[in-house]
Length: 73
Image (cartoon, rainbow, N blue to C red; front, side, top):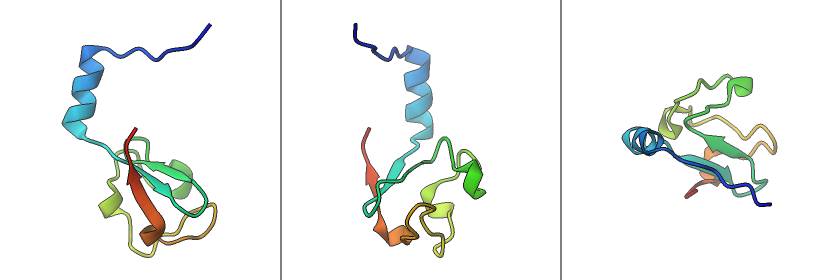
C-alpha cells in the first residue's frame, strides 16, 4: 500500500507565508532546507540561503555556495 503525505489547509498557508526554499549542491546532492536549517553545521532553522556566509562550504564535498541551485519540491 502506498504512503501518501497529507496536507492541511493550515499547513499550506504556513508554507506560502514563509516561502522557504530548498537548495541542493550540484556536486554531491546535499540538500539545505531553509525551514529546517542545518543545526549540525551551526545554521539555525529558518535561516535564509542569502543569510549564510559567502565563504560557507558544503559539509559533504566542500563545494562553495555557487555550486548550489534552488530546487522546487
